[in-house]
Length: 423
Image (cartoon, rainbow, N blue to C red; front, top):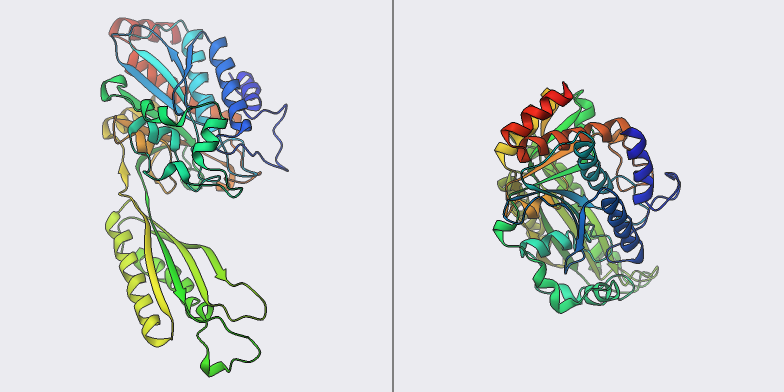
């Protein structure tokens, strides 16, 4: 199994060997993402699966039993950020296909259909909009998505159509609730909790969806050499105290909070951004996350109050726009219990944990019982060329999915046969 995983890990990354110097760039609806999807199709066909692409560009590889029985789904994505790693997303797609190979190699016969979904456009790196493929499946697409543009001025509509899809057909990707029974995603952790706790597998309880604020400080641009210090309305100076405030308040709130909260001032736009002109306008982007939604709401309130103080004390105007305010997503407790039991049966140590990053599963969970498992990634590095997960951990993830699918799709007779074959 490790040899198969190694071979197909490189294939899905469109390389002959993993290259950590330059990383991987497969942006949403790009030719590179399309090539990786085509590789997924070839691997799936070699496993004897039925393959099709839906109207959003998601690839489906299905072990078909009968149209009349339920379908259990697993999956993830193969697109990346710019110069990202080769495991974020790919690990879940690879392990999903490998789990089917493992079941077939052991002559398992499912009583339900099993499908592996290779989602399109999970990362927000190109358009600033994430999980387009899984949002299409669940009817959660943003209303203004068509005209959202990348840094080169290409809109989502244009990118999707250059990919070979038809924009007007995109809503047809949405599935009925009865078309899937459940969904499971595997992903690299993108942190060090598994490693820090000496565990093998993370079983995720909830996904911390963000509140994102856009805070704009408007002052007065003027000449740096001729404007006296006491007659300035410097938007940059006015905005500066907010940056440590966000960090310090988050730390303070974590002292008493039952669940962790993180907050980051992660973007800055400064205008006119000229050496001899006082900054007249500064916009900061703030990302706030916790699975405890009340903590996010409370920090956002404190930020707004602090900005009101700045506005009173300095000759600037502060405008706050809420870009995103999504409730956190909690995953199916029955699936979590099954996964924890599977880990113990395989002699793996599971860790119950939450995810600070968003994944396709957060959309799928709005429609179907869903679960998420993490495998370790070295030093928690992700979205970086040094991102790394060992083949041994990929194999553990594969065996987790295979055993989960065996439990979920095998009837009593088949499960008894399986136990006899693997004893």
